[in-house]
Image (cartoon, rainbow, N blue to C red):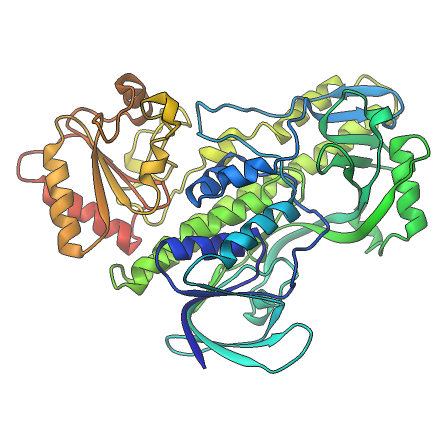
Length: 536
């Protein structure tokens, strides 16, 4: 029998991210993935801003960038076919490195998984078992027994884990085994074909995230670049009312591709898949010592690109909490805040993704009727322009040291507020390309103003008393050299004030000055509420 602190079920980007993050916190873990190699049929084709920030913290940004596919000129291009008449297009979305240090990245999921698998395999403290399936999961008082077997058969092995994170996807068995239902609805079925071919003659100098061609019998057939050159995905959405459409035959797949391209095309079909498209969120994120993350916890239509991105944020929220509880530095109640904080975010993203899908129907009706499609296309720009949703969502309840009702909400979405991600700001000198976010990830950090020495001393005393990893940073200072005017605008911290940032980069508490002698009591109470998960 093997013992581990943490067992992660599922080796997609969410599970692999959880393993890398656990290693950074020094948590020994076992990762189990049933497929020996990454699934070759690409699903996600890009990482949003916050997801790329997390990959930056995990040391993967440069490698991911090196395999990025392309920078498109357009977001969506609407047309009869690639060779036919074009009706309109949208921009590729907002790229604004004043709000974050990295921006987005166009990389197919299979390439991303290979990068992450190689890193996990070389990471100390992670026992990565690829080609291994979970046979049975049994919870006992303070641990979980998990029976494993090689996917291709062989002897079983039992692993005992203190905690389990299920990242085994929408079709994984863990959520069902725990008796946790999914609340939501089926939107349709996505028939997808992955193929190689040269269609440069009809693409010309147009580059786009997707080309959407209007099918006469309803909906769009999409040609989506995977690498921007020769790798493509062609897919269409089928209505859920007709039931599962089944897999595409080779003839059907070729027909779909040629109809979208608009002329005969020498397509080398690599794989085809049919997915149920749902907008749903698990009724619970936790059962005892087992937590759901990623697609095991929430499923969205692909119209928005928030599936993978929401999933990696899940584990970024959860791992630091598990670490503190394992080390006896926080009560088990802290783990309850994972669901409290993350489930509302998933519900919001599910609704938004579904609304994106519904808007396509209006655009299709305009295109197929040859009417001007301007206004519906303009509204569909929201599909890609989602920086506020990605970077400025806010936890209203959970591991917070201050009631959100007590904070000033009359501010920009990208300024500091309790429950929100701490704002990005470049450190000086600019040539080093370091963000203040790079200083905040992985531990509690107190930012204090030039007259906030009492907050610094209170935080040091409290951190030492609790044996809690806690850093203090005076702003501005040599260690945190930022533009003081920009810092004042974004953090709204008076000279005698302080801001407490959690290990996942979210603001837990904000305070101006205090009467002499009261700083320690006020800070201790804020930290106690944060660790106890009693903030609202």
